[in-house]
Structure formats: C-alpha cells, structure tokens
Length: 213
Image (cartoon, rainbow, N blue to C red; front, top):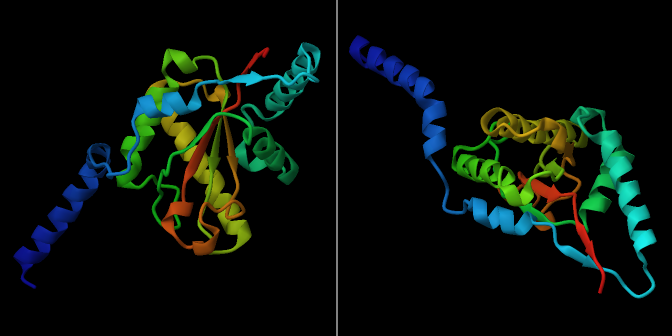
C-alpha cells in the first residue's frame, strides 16, 4: 500500500466517524414503524368490567398499580429487583403495548442505524396529545448469547439508551418513562435464541381507562 493509499484510507475513516451520527439519522430499515401506528397501539383502551366487578374494586386495583409505579418511577434501571421486574411484566401484560423491533449492535447498547427511524417515530408518538400524561414502561431485551448476568446488564443499558434518546431529543419527562431490563429471560423467538429479533425494546402504556358495560 502506498503512502497515498494509507493517507486516503485514514481520511476516509475519519470522515466516516465524523458523519456517523448524521448518517444514522437518515438510514432506516424496511421494517420501521410509523408514529401514528405507535400511537394507535398505545392508546388507552377502555376496560369493560364484568358483572361481579364494581367501581370500588376497579379503583382499588388502579390505586395499587399507581402506588407500585411510583416506587419504580425515576429509579435506576439496575436498581430494580427481580420481584419488581416481574411485577412490572405482570402489570404490562394487560396494558396497551407495542414491540418495536428496535435493533441494537451486537454486544452493544448502541441503536442500530437501521432502527434509528423507529426510535424517532417513538419519540413523535409519545409526544402526541393522545398519549399525554401516560406513564410508559421501556423494556430492554437481549438475545440468548452470553451469560444471564451479562445480558441482564446489557438489556438495562439498552432500555436506558432509549430513555435518554427520548428525553434529550423529544423533551419527554424522564419521570414518565420507567425503564426495565429482562436480559434473555423473555425471548421473542425462544426457538432461535441467537436471532437478532430478540434484541429489541418493548414499550407499554401503563395507563388505562375503565368503562362500565
């Protein structure tokens, strides 16, 4: 390799590094979702009460949920206990949610370039008046490669990355974003644990409306 080639290669690498953030904002994969789709998926849906369940029971349940959420609100992701993580998952199971397929670089909490558009769509969606005032859970997941301890920490960092992006770029209130990591304990494709589809973030709207039938 000539000195010119070496110099040109070095300049190209430097230019690539300098433009990486700008380029990542422009690149998007074919599977990116729109802000309107996210809003529709996360809108609070009326919960119809059965005949044996009255307003008082609904109010009591909602009060318990709110009290629990307040204990994890604005907490460090890594400070959550296993029991708290599972309680969040249990509550989230009945709430409006969307699995965004936000991909991350392998062994990294860096958002993959092809998924930046999806994170931007999420920011726009959570800024929509239809979702204003809601509390959202941002749950990070990894693939099955590596130890449980390593993947748990990685999933927490991935959830924190999304929260930081939303707060910094869309002015969202960090107190309304509860982050949690599940490591490799809740694979989307358990039969193919190494598949990149498992490296994702799920967003859940923890607020619901109750309507009498």
